[in-house]
Image (tube, rainbow over all chains, first blue to last red):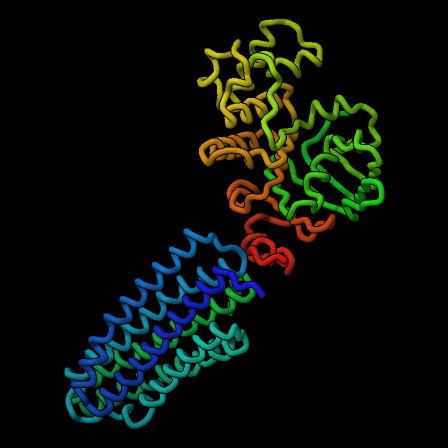
Length: 216
Length: 252
C-alpha cells in the first residue's frame, strides 16, 4: 500500500499533539500534588514548565501552517489540520491554568481548608481524566468517548458550585481563613476552566469526525 | 422561446458506440454561479460539458438519451443548434484563436449572426475585450494577428470571442491547464466577474482552482456522477468515500 507523504505528516502532527497533551496532563497532576503537600519546589517546576507548553503550541502551529502551505489538504485531511490548530489553543490554556495553580502554592498558608480533604482532590482527578479522555477521543476518533467527556463537565461544574459554597461557609465561620479560601476559590475555578477546555477539545473531535459543528 | 441560464439534466446516458460514457446522470446547475466538474481523465466530465451545446452531435456512433434542458428549452428536442450555441459559448483547453486579426476574431461570431455595420462591430469588440479585461492591453493592436499574442492572452481572447455573442452560459474545458499562474489568475478573476451576468461550467483537473472559483462542484468517476454539491461542502466534508479518496489524492 502506498504511504502518502501527507499521512506521514499528519501522523507526526498527532504525535506532537499527544506529547503536548501528556505534558499538560502531568502539569495538572503535579500542581495538585504540590498544592496538597505544600511543596513549593514542585510548584516552581510546574510553574516554569509552562514555557515548554507555549513552545509546543508554536511548533505545532508552525507545522500545521507548513502542511497547509505545501500540501493544501482537503476533506478529512483539512479537518485534521484545522482541528489540531484549534485544539492546541485549548491545551495551551490548560497549561496556563495548571501553571497558575502552581503559582498560588507559595501564597497559601499551611492550614488546611475543608475542600482540600473533600472535593478538591476529586476535582483534580476529574480534570486530569477529562483532559486524558479528550485527547484520546481525538487520537482514536472516538466520538462516544468525546460525548462522555462532555457530559462529565456537568459533574465538574456541580463540584465547583459545592466547593464555592463550602468556602463561603468557611469564611463566614472563621474569617481568619479568608485569604486562603480566596486562593482556593481561584484554584477550583482554574480546575473548572480546565474542564471547559477539555469539552472544547471534544467538540472539535466531533467536528473532525462528522464535518459538522453540533451543539451539545 | 428564450434560453434560460440554468441547466437541468435528467437521467442522461451517453454512448460512444458500445462504450457507456455517461451513466444515468441527473443534476441541476444553478444560474449565475460557477459549477466545476472534477474527476480523473476519462470520467465523462468533458463529455457532459459538451452535451450542453451539443458538441457531441458530430461524433460518430454517439448516442444520447435523457433530458437536457437549458431554462425551459429541451436542447436535444429543439432543432436550432445555432441558436443554442449563440446562448451557450465554449472555451477549450488549448487556446484556438483564428488565424486573423484580434478584431476579426471577436467580430467573427457577430458577423456570422448577420451583424455587418462597422460601428456596431466596433462596439461589440470593445465591450467584449473590456469584459475580458483585455481592452487596455489590446486596443492598440486590434489589427495585429491574434497568433502573435501570448498563450494566456490568446486564451482570454478566446473568452472575449465567446462573449461577443452575449452567451447566457459559458462552458470552459480546462481553460487554464496550459497557462502560467499569472494568466491562470487573470482567467479565474475574469470568471468571478463574468458570473454576475452568466452561468459558468468549468472542467478542471486543478483541485485548488475548483475550490478557489466554483460555487458548486460535481465529482465524476467512470461515467457516474458520484457527488454534486456546494464546493465548500465537497472539499471540507464530502459525503461519498470515493470523492474523499479522489480529492485527497488517495485514489487508486
